[in-house]
Image (cartoon, helix red, strand yellow):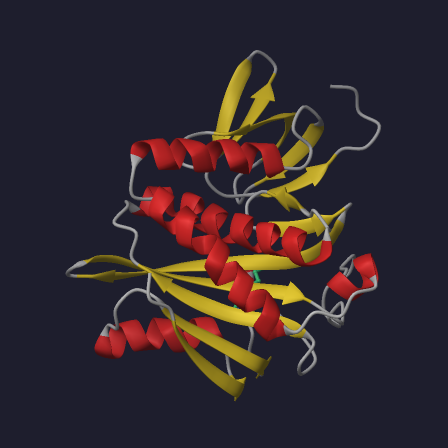
Length: 245
Ligand code: BTN
């Protein structure tokens, strides 16, 4: 993959920028936007993502994996797992993945991923945004942490981005084959927090308690509820402490 990185000192949102670029001039896969500061950073479910200038890796990547929209969660996983692997190599810190899109240390959020689909005649374009707290926990998120708080180390956004892109090379290629996607599913399941433990999944329609059992081949969350296994495409997951599986 040829990555082409565009750097902005300040921008509204790197995701918004890449989504607009796809609609405007439809650039090839591999375009990366990175910013020192976002004035209108966005998170999942219309939440805001706020980081003081220069304290986080704030980037978005344009991918065209040739998958169906239902497989979007695997694309999120490829990026989240690459960020995790890069952090392991740079700091020794091994964050867990909290389905669907967070990197966590214990219960504290270290990073988030926001994937957006733009439909084009030539297939789906996927803009995957990644925000990693490096030296600040960010004012807006309760229960957040940063690389510095978790390790005492100060990483630069550029050093982390370089390694994330290096790690993404193989995982992006894995999205193109059945075997590769199975390997990603396995890595995703291994990195997930709370597998085998009691969780509550809340969607727009319901709230369900059960035992987290990993992800299926499309990256959907599997939860054992009574004798059935439920499969979730969207939702928020919390750990139910003290509950016996
Ligand atoms: C979440 O945890 O809800 C997802 C957060 C994603 C934040 C990143 S920061 C870079 C990119 N640009 C945005 O506006 N959002 C993503």
